[in-house]
Image (tube, rainbow, N blue to C red):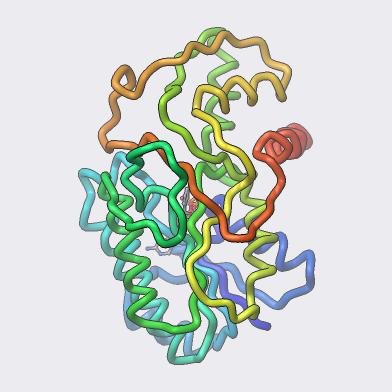
Length: 276
Ligand SMILES: NC(=O)C1=CN([C@@H]2O[C@H](COP(=O)(O)OP(=O)(O)OC[C@H]3O[C@@H](n4cnc5c(N)ncnc54)[C@H](O)[C@@H]3O)[C@@H](O)[C@H]2O)C=CC1
C-alpha cells in the first residue's frame, strides 16, 4: 500500500497520517503548498509520478459561511479539485476515498438520513460537497464516499476548542439547541478509514461517533469533561443568525459501523488536548 493523503494540514488529514504511520503504512501527506488540487495539470503529473495505490482526499474548502460569498473558490476546490483527483486516481488505478458531510442533506424531519437518502443541500458548501460526490461517482469505480459530521481533532480549529477558548473570558454562553447531530473525533475516523482501504467494498458510508446531541448538549458535555464552570443557555437557530443556513437534523444512520460514543471520544480528546 502506498497512500496519498490530501489536506494534511487540516483536522482529519493530520490524524489520518498519524494512524497510517502508527501502522507503518507507506504514505505521503500533502496540502496546498505541495499541490494545489484546483490545478488540473499539476494534479495529474503529481499523481502519475507518485503512483499511489490509495488516495484519501481530506482537502476541502470548509469555511461554510464564507463559501456563500466566495462561491468560485469553494466550487473550484470541492468540485473541480475532487474531479481532477478522481480522474488521476483512475489513471493509476488507485482506490479513492472521498470525505463528505452531513451537510449534503437538508436536515428536514427527525429521522436519521441513511446512505440512500436523497441529498438536498441547503447551503453552498453542502452543494459543492454533494457535487464532489457526483464527480467521484462519475469518474472512478473504486471509491469509498464517507460522510462524516461535527468533527473535532487535535490539529486546527473546531467547536470544542472554540468553547474552551471562550471559557477563558466568559462564564455564560448561549448555544443553539435545535440542531442535532453526532460530534466525531478525527482520530476515530482515521482508524475507520485505514480499515476500509482495500476492502473493495466500494460505496457510500456514514461514519460518526455513536449517539446524537444538540450543539447545546455538546457544549455542556465539553465543560463538564474539561472541569470548567460555565452557564450554558439553550437558544434557537433563529436567535443565532449565520450567513449560511445549517440543517437542523444532521442525524445519520450508519451501515454496520460501530464507533465509541461521542462522549467517550470527547473525554479522550480533551485528555489529549491537555497533554499538549
Ligand atoms: N470540519 C467538520 O466539521 C466537517 C468536515 N467534513 C469534511 O471532512 C474533510 C476534512 O475536514 P477538516 O479536516 O475539518 O478540514 P480543514 O479545513 O481542517 O482542512 C482542509 C485542508 O484542505 C486544504 N486545502 C484547501 N484548499 C486546497 C487546495 N486548493 N489544494 C490543496 N489543499 C487545499 C487546506 O489547506 C486545509 O489544510 C473535508 O472534506 C470536509 O468537507 C465533513 C463534515 C464535517
